[in-house]
Image (cartoon, rainbow, N blue to C red; front, side, top):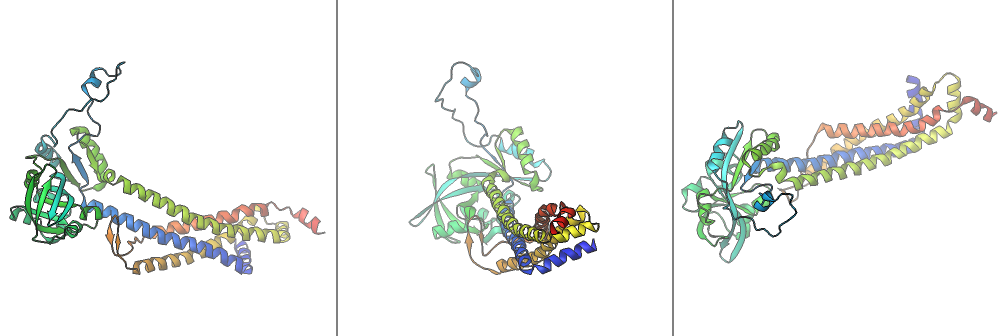
Length: 414
């Protein structure tokens, strides 16, 4: 083993330029993998954490996943006659026996629930009219299912109960209206009901779609604005274990019939984008490492071609096929290890550089620079893939070296 390592090391040192190019290729692949993984997973984990903190884990809505079948469909199911254009039966919106559902859900361990009435409303301040989602809440219950209280940057949620008609606005929504704490607005519902309301609080969740379009009021006031007395159209749940959201949502939907959306379903479009991002990242960095491995393949193939007589001599003095393979596999392993170590240093430096950059980003979330996630897993995965690729790239041409027949080489030389 020591002799094979000495020979492999000598081959690497003799071809310093080619070896350096191969090492640089592996180093770049490993370094960029670490930097890209840190950046993408940092953003993804931060977004998921904000969604889990800001939004409820499960939302039960006053709708059904599948519309109820029409009487004609139930009576003549599979019949020869098919009816079109049937108008669905008018039913009052809202969750029936909402308080009974709340009591049943509260009996489940590790689950908090809050009733809400959500609807669209226009907010008028001066000459500005802005459409917003008005959410009627009960402050004591709301603080158990969302982080609204922690996200307040002005005022408190208790102020909703201390003012006749109080409203809490998202920071972006307040900016669009030009309103601030203490401003009096006019709320206009889609039913035409108007109500004067005073801004008693501002919140910042960090998620643009929430900060720019949501406002909160007392549940009773929202019912008045929307002309829907005693109506609750959403139950918002928070779980002690967020990973149980999908299973619990399925059980609640099967039990009560109403549509229950876990946070994974509500954000399925964004989570799907994350899958595509990861696929692009792994394929791009993998391509860099594959190109680097072609360099290793080329170097080893050239050495085998030039050292055919030396290989024949080694076999004639007792080296077996696996010994010959070991020499060239060790050569690829050496390049892979050195490239990985240099790539780790490069990746660490790139992550530190990205962390030092400061600029304003406003998209899914609002942040002031790259959101990075540092993990030893990134280094291990990048190093493992690089070393494995280097070994495979060296092993492929080593098979030809192992098949060299010393008798034919000696006769040809003679």
